[in-house]
Length: 403
Ligand SMILES: CC(C)(COP(=O)(O)OP(=O)(O)OC[C@H]1O[C@@H](n2cnc3c(N)ncnc32)[C@H](O)[C@@H]1OP(=O)(O)O)[C@@H](O)C(=O)NCCC(=O)NCCS
Image (tube, rainbow, N blue to C red; front, side, top):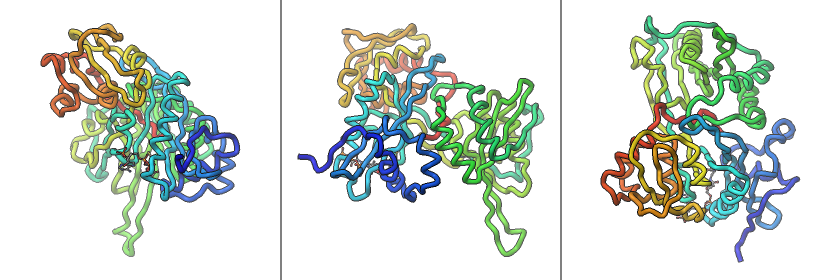
């Protein structure tokens, strides 16, 4: 018999399961005041937990939203958050059992795709999640920043007080909309748990107003390291969350942020791989990419529905054979054409596992590169080039929402 039991969490187990998560991530147990505020964002209904007797020792959670896929359709999406196992229970199969319970449940709930942000990149491939989008971190030397004369310039920026920052920004995000593949909707629970916590934690929010009203916002934090001599004080500004409906709003927000007095260094955290900011500066090296990291890990829960939801580029069809150990009903051959995808009995041109398919799905990796890397088994030598054209997207995928 197993030493622990995995089951759906029930009402009354919310706070204890959250504390398992928080401590696994090296945080403090949630205080009464914070719990009173965020409890609605941590319902039992979407959680599975592992128990040693009555005591929760592991948890996985999710919230329901939509994700934009190539071609512009919004698809039901489970944002998997809140995974943690108590330190004395790790490497005993707890996460594997939690995933075995959660994955079919997400399928039953009608989600087509699931996604997560991984604390470490070696954990989730075995459950069929693949890196579908990457992000970069900018370090900006404010003293070197000069805007090119042709960089967009319009609108104005207003700094919000804390109450307005909580009230106004969700509507601005909604009106900006999902703009590129990988973007997800943000339910009220996300705003409560994440954005409101940023604001209470000292982050400030700037909103950009263009000709048609609010069209961008930036949530940022400044930190000053004090030294004995005034000249050696160093202030950093970290932009945690920035969304803009158009390049003018993006430029307007950065013009404002990089114009704030006494700041030496600014960071753009979790920016898309094709963020145009460096191209708007006289000296593009004023804005350096200091890290490229995996952002959204994607899981195709219903391969057929997922392949049908996106559009494809022009190329001759390719038959792909997909292997999915955890959700075997997904395993089989699919014919991907410029007009869509469907199950087939035809002989496969390539074979890949569902994790690798997740890497291709939003257009973040070139299939022929993954074939060269050995992740796609090739039976028809022409197939990888055709897959390149079929799966290619104009913009880089980017989720842009941390959960
Ligand atoms: C990551 C975490 C949830 C894994 O839980 P766990 O119960 O130890 O995982 P399991 O015992 O089920 O391990 C399953 C497999 O993943 C591997 N694995 C799990 N965590 C790993 C890690 N951090 N690094 C490398 N491999 C890991 C195990 O070795 C095992 O491999 P196997 O299938 O080849 O035997 C747990 O270590 C944890 O809570 N860590 C701290 C918080 C955290 O990082 N949460 C994730 C947030 S996204």
